[in-house]
Length: 169
Ligand code: OFO
Image (cartoon, rainbow, N blue to C red; front, side):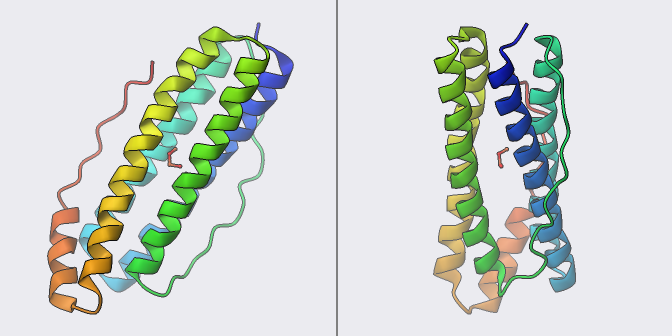
């Protein structure tokens, strides 16, 4: 049976992962309005990843005899100034999520739940990847500046991203 404090901390993080899904879905809608289909695709993959992150913790908590308690999901922002503004926000958000997973890891460490620590290691590694992916798109957007042609080229590149269901272990 999982420790009660850790169970609560997992539920907080599950909510954050669902919020991430919701935020990226809102960003996807923004890119639909701009008709940037590659960006739409990139966000839709991100949305699916966040759902997988949330469900990974959802399943784990159940497996450990804990109780999943879903909370209301905060309303996400719905408009941004530009694609650059979106990706600056994505990076900020991912850095925040990294910090909250670290906090969850701190609780697992505090209650000496080594199995949970080992499970959460996957999430910490995933965050390194997430920040790197977002950072790469952001760096390109900074280079692009106001060049519309270059933006459309990046849009084409982002159309190639595909969702591969992560194996969380
Ligand atoms: Fe779940 O990694 Fe992004 O938020």
